[in-house]
Image 1 (cartoon, rainbow, N blue to C red):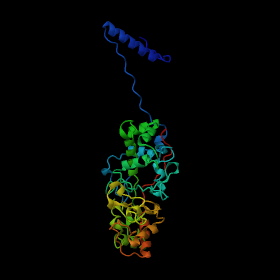
Image 2 (tube, rainbow, N blue to C red):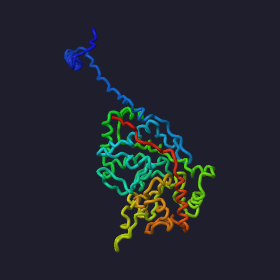
Image 3 (tube, helix red, strand yellow):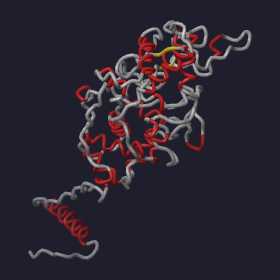
Image 4 (cartoon, one colour):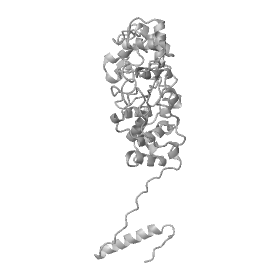
Amino acid sequence: MRLVRRSRPGAAASALLALAALAALAAQSGCCAVPVPPAPPVPLAAPEVGLEAANPLRPLPEPPLGSPADWAAVPWVTPAKVRLGRWLFFDTRLSADGTLSCASCHQPSLAFSQPTPRSTGIRGQQGTRKAPPILNAAFPVYPAFFWDGRAASLAEQAKGPIANPIEMGHTLDGAAAAIRGVAGYRPWFREAFGDERVDIDRIAEAIAAYEATRLSGNSRADRFDAGDATALTAAEQRGRALFFGRGACATCHLGPNLTDGKFHNVGIGWRAPPPGAPPERGFEDLGRAAVSHDPRDTGAFKTPTLRDCSRHAPYMHDGSVATLREAVALYRTNGQANPWKSEKLRAGPLSWEDVDDLVAFLGALDGEGFDDEPPRRFPH
């Protein structure tokens, strides 16, 4: 039989119907069934032209001096997931109205923090907390994320703002459907995960993989610790001595990321309640207690990293402290008094000169390794 190279529209469908009819007749007459050819497989999506150049595949970065990053500790972080996660981190289509991305609050130029006291969500809604920085976030002392520790992994943390009605305002299923509907993402999910399935767990894992590469290190303080005696000024050296000595800052701000990863009440957000009201009414935000349901955690929030803190103003979980000097000055009196204030606040008396020296040292914690900017093109 001669092959037909060009068939009119509908010819293939007609041929299949004819074969099916022959098969039915053959079955009725007892003859051998005529095989029906299987449907052709769905072709794999091909990458869009130019996207590779807009977001090239890069090896995992070399951790800078002083950074706690250890790629062997996070084997799920791969270059392909990082590339996919970089697109997703900056993609506004993860929000319900297409206006916000993860980077809207975690801004690269501010060491992946934000310049406002509280986050602003879709339709201009105001949140109750400031977005914490994500530098070195994949390498915590304890795996607890958000100011109140309600997420146990960086991937779980990535889901939170997406589903928060006053942040990105989507449902997790809705966000996954939005990305699933972008055909241009399919080859990059295949590259990162082995097939083209798009779901919220993969989206969150890819975002977390990108966030894991936002490292900070090689600060002047790191270089001083490594033996460069000229890396810090005299004031910064005095501040360093205070930080690790009489100032007792390292009681909570310890280790390479300068945080113990735990939760402490330092009085931020406390206002004496009206007479006769229960004392917990003094906190607008109960912090860790709302998650742990332990009254001892009332008003307690996670110790933030101090790396690149000069870029993070305003400060504290509610952004209520405008400058770094004001933030340090709060600890001259060991924090604001309230019934649940942490017993770890026990610094010796600090003068205003001490405060200035501590601020100088904190400025020397500004590092490198996290710089980035939005991709020039996104999958469509």
